[in-house]
Each structure stands twice: as C-alpha cells, then as structure tokens.
Amino acid sequence: MDGGELLARVHSIVPDRGIRHELEPPDERLLARAVGVAYQALGPAAAAVVERGADLLGDELMTRPAPGLSLAHGDWLPKNLVIDDGTIVSVIDWEFAGPASPAFDLARWEVSAGDRLHDRSDLLRRGYARVADPDAADTGWVSAFAIGWALEVLGWKNPASPARLRRCVDVIAGYAGA
Image 1 (cartoon, rainbow, N blue to C red):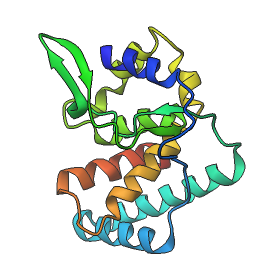
Image 2 (tube, one colour):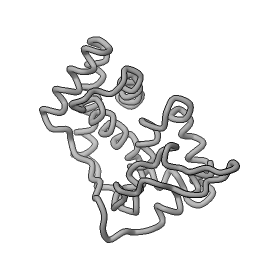
Image 3 (cartoon, rainbow, N blue to C red):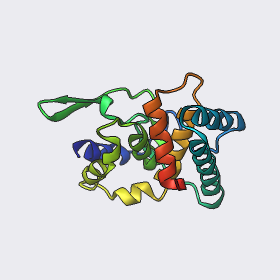
C-alpha cells in the first residue's frame, strides 16, 4: 500500500521530458508473433484470447479520447522498490520515466508485479487512494495499457517464461473475455 501512495505522489508531477509512453495498436508482426507464442505455449484458446485482446485494444484507441499525462515511472514494480525494515526507502530504475497516463504504471503492476502481488493490485490502489483517486488515475485506461503490455511481452523475440506468458493471457482474458 505504501508503494501505491508513493506512486500517486509521482503521478502528481507533470513532466516536460523523458520517454513518452503512448498506447498504440500492436503492429501486425508483433501481433502475429504474440498469437503464435500463445498458441504454441498455451494452445488455440489462448491464441483466440490474444486476438480478442488486440481487437479490444484497437477499439479503445479508436473510440476514446487520449488520457491525460503525468510522470510515469515506467517500471513501477516491487523489484524497483528498495525496502528497509518494512519501509520503502528508495525507488530505483528510473530509466523509463517520462510522460504517460497514470494508468500506464497501474497496468504494468497488474501484468508484471510477480506471482504474489500482481493479483493484489487492490493493495496498490488502496495506497494510491491515500493521496489521489485511483479511479481518476485509471480513467478506464488500465485495461488498454494492460492488454498493450501483455501483447508486447507475448511478442518478445526472446519469449518470456511459461508462467509469464500465462499471466499475460490471463490478464487479456480478464478484460477481453475468456
């Protein structure tokens, strides 16, 4: 929860430089690779989920106004929170920081936080609520950013672990239907 509070404080900053994280539809090669990886690793049902996720992402991008921007860490995950005696004392790995929707960091956590925490996005959101409204930060875009990131991970040239591939398909299924 403290990580969520700290993230809300980061999101209160409006940056003028850094890596700009914009949500875009997956290109054809990435999508074909993601579908193929899902098919090979998890079967035809997973490949169908990936295709539905890509369609949903495309629909969202075509029909909704772009989200507002704030400072995003770009890799807000437990592995980048330095904890001493139960307290976050530092946040490392700022190389991907830059302008993005706050939904970007919230979505990355959901997809990539790790086995014990990615299903506990509620803790991050409760901590975020100590400072700012997580629903206002989400603005309905967490689903699109989560699908976009999951598609990217599935489309990596060096495939992720089977557990990570399963997590990506599960996240997409949660938003695009099983």
